[in-house]
Amino acid sequence: MEESGRRYSIAQPPDGSFGSLLPNGSWNGMVGMVIRKEVDLALGPFAITYDRSVAVDFSFPLLVDNVKILGRRGRTEVNEWSFVMPLGPLVWLMTFVSLLALVVVTKLLGMIERKIPFGGGPGYSTYIRIIFQQDVEDRQSLAWERVMVCFWALAVFVIFASYKSNLMSLLAVRYISEPYQTWRDMVEDESLTIIQFANTAQTQIISAAESGIFHDVAEAGKRGHYRLIPVPGFVPVVDKLVSRGDHVFLAPFLMMKLFLTEDYMHKGNCKFYASSEGFMESHLSLVFQKNSPLRIAMDRRIKGAIEGGLYEYWISDAIPNVGSCKRPPTKITVQESLSMNDLWGMFVVLVAGYVASFVAFVSEKTAAQLLTRHKEEELNLLHE
Image 1 (cartoon, rainbow, N blue to C red):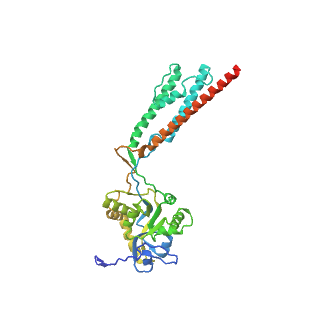
Image 2 (cartoon, rainbow, N blue to C red):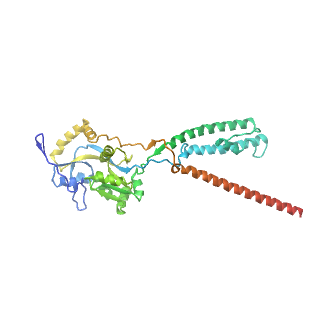
Image 3 (cartoon, rainbow, N blue to C red):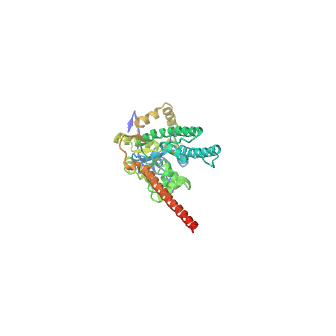
């Protein structure tokens, strides 16, 4: 190829990979071509690792990148337990603790005021009726008891007015799940298969790990849950596998952004997501033969391109619309009828309440019958 009076040729490695160290000490991929002096430099960009730095020279770093998880976004769904979500766990707890404390304090003060053993004042049923917004009638209470009931009613009104408004909002929201955000999430799911580029710095680190999460990923490969794919033509492979929902893809975010943009531009959707957390952060550079004079000359030009913002501009120009699916929303608002699948949790609570009420009713009837029988037996003994 000739451009501006300069001639150069482009070569590709037979396996289409970046290059990793083999057990016999040789290198494959583009790194291997540089080491064997089949080419003067490799564009990559390549992650800087110790093993590579021993075999080749790196240019001034082009950028810092990390590995992320690419997964299939879930379908829109309503949280079936959304009716408990308008109030936080601490608010629920404090509401019931306040109810209990109010009943105890009222009974104690009533005992002091009326000289009745732990009695006097509104019963616990009065405060519970207020929670369920039922009427309350108590003409025998003293002024201070009525004040306590009044302030409890005001607090309950504020809490449950907020509950109602928040519940309406939550029922109109659909959640889109993005389940795999960490490597531990992947490893613990036995139904999931992890795919990654073959012969890269990342795969070499994983295969060499003797403990930790990287070792766990390598062990997943022994169980058939970790698969390596070639770099050439990876877009249709990833599209097919990850779209099924039982595969995730590990790759540098630079290449993942390209894939996300391709997905958006060609198909008009954001069915994939990239994990919010990144792993294996590394500097990416060009690769040269050891002690190559080209490296010094190229470093000056690379520094100038980076400091002038040219490299970032070239990346943005090469991957247009890169932000479209980079952070897609995980919540959307809709206006449609709710199905039983959306609200079954509420009916579970309702049925559980009916069952508990029936058990209490049977217990009370049984206890009353036993008490009546016991009294009758005592009367019979007295008459005898």
